[in-house]
Length: 408
Image 1 (cartoon, rainbow, N blue to C red):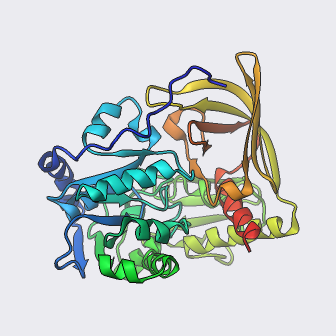
Image 2 (cartoon, rainbow, N blue to C red):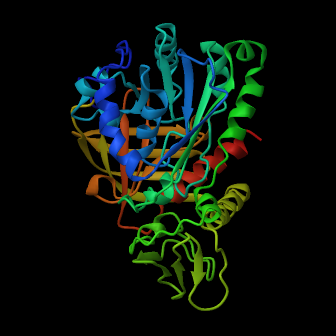
Image 3 (tube, rainbow, N blue to C red):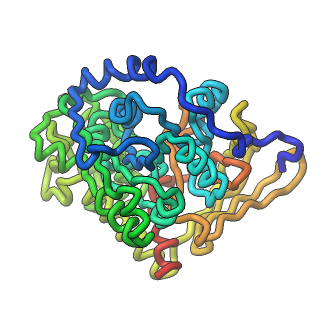
């Protein structure tokens, strides 16, 4: 499939970051608007090179990291769709391309080149925006990567970016007083002495965050009149009647179209049932309840989903290739995509052990709706289920639970 199509050159050496003062100037207005407060802990005497690990809730994260690292050079790891139609620009400012959730040894070599050149290697290890403002799964290889790079490990954890611009509702909600903490977890000497497991454990601990809990603790009221819109993409199952894929949202209201129950999203980011008990006032608790339901399906061996789907491929940064219609299956064996392109049948399989999580998009590019994007080392497939009720959020949860079951 796609024989003869040139793939993105992942091996090209990353350039040193250019235009740092200009990039900083472009970021400053939003930082000022949201009154971002940056705290640095243990950073005295820490200079590049180092490995920078950042949490990921919104595009605002990049602006804060620009401020936190200025005036030093930084090479960011960016997904291939970020390079679309602007590969020259992203390479010019030092970005490194990655296909999400792949075991890519070339990326490790690129990071090594960056730190060996005396610069900062910046990675967003959650590999996607958080779905509900809490920590996404981290790859357990992070400790090994840190040991290989032999440089300090620094974290940058931002608070407030999810509630300001949730993945499911991107417009700016005008949150003031966002925060960020930049912390040196390990010096180079400490990295050398610690085990990979110890390093990973510390990173996991540092990445524990909850934007909705942070909002409530700070007492920050969000008056954005459409703050509930899109939330049904994350909260796809009704806790009142148990029905999946029948949730909807508008304005400040989340609703189950199966049983009619409604919840209001308050200015403090909490849920309140219009009638009867409020099953979950804290949005992440509802999300984790869904996870537990998916986990039960996985442990019972009953998880399975098959649908027709529209498929686009992105072999390089020039543009998407329409592969037409295919059949997507996600079950106890992992993902399987079968279809035909230019008269040639194809089958692409992602076994359970190959994916500890997966990347999803809501209303991706305003094209065909929600999608899951699955990657090989040379291709990225954007898969849009069609003619069925579904939730890509459930795909993500099931991928994680299947992987967890397979390794425990």
